[in-house]
Length: 293
Image (cartoon, rainbow, N blue to C red; front, side, top):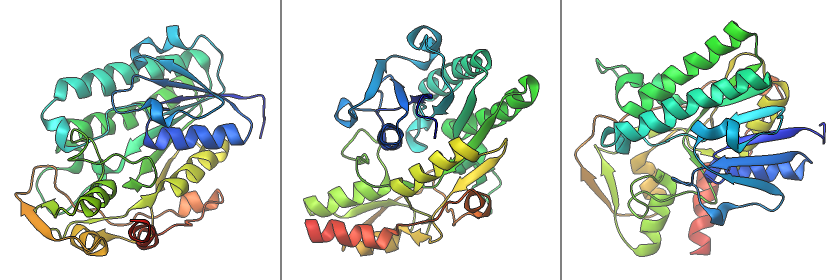
């Protein structure tokens, strides 16, 4: 690792971004975070990181430094709420990301883009996964745009796909404005003695991937990734009913939404060729949470 390298993390005060910043600092990089704190939090700040508060549309002004790698994680990142606020998705994930891509073009550095696995959802419906919500659509288009920028301007890049990341600093849905994630939401329900609220029948599956495994993958992709796509996925998939049972939660059901979907574990062969190994499984994490409660 070149300890003189400067790395920019958009969304560096968010859930995954803060863990990534922490690992980068630990490995000796100079780390700059650009975050507008839409879902990020100053509680996630990590010692040694330089924090810039602002919109990615203003990246060129807010980050005048020359950078070696950009990790672009700073986008709107929830499916169901995006159906209610498409204009926010457009502002953050289209206008903001275009400015990041232009910054990348001017810097001529490497970009690692956090794509969304939602575009791969295929459970027999007529509507493609990418077209089920504004979030899915914007992320799918941006992934394609990253590939095109790389080809048009001969720029180094990789696209990483997250699969239902969980772990410390996760946000809880019903307790956090609807922007949270399943595992922390269920954990909070367990602590509060409330039943799990599940859209649909609960048989929909997810490959829940620990944030530490996600970050270790991102580090390898930043170092060794080619102009390609990499899935960061646990090998186990669980239904929401199974996850609720792991937390010993009672279950209540609400109507499925247009974003309700199933997703299995993804092939991580390409990631493993870079040296990645999954080290955490969801059942162990939940057991630890229950023991601590």
